[in-house]
Length: 89
Image 1 (cartoon, rainbow, N blue to C red):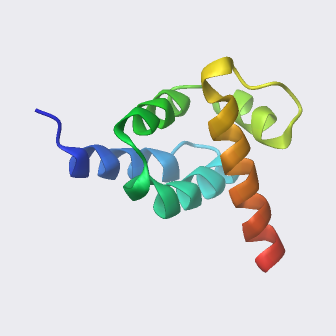
Image 2: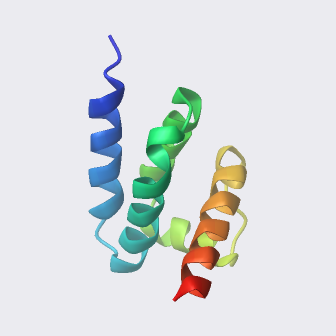
């Protein structure tokens, strides 16, 4: 049986505790703002993204390297979210 609430809690924790302060901040804030509203399928994609190397994720977020195909839309969404955060402050 799928316990969505526990799954989201785990994803949120993993988003904030990755080991790289910069990706922690971006992914953690994104997770706090978006996980509850995500479809189960998108949660699985986000979960898979968290299994990727922080260095790769960082390069994808900065646009320094193309994201792997399953993550292209998600990375674009996280980039837009981060840009909105930065322009608000």
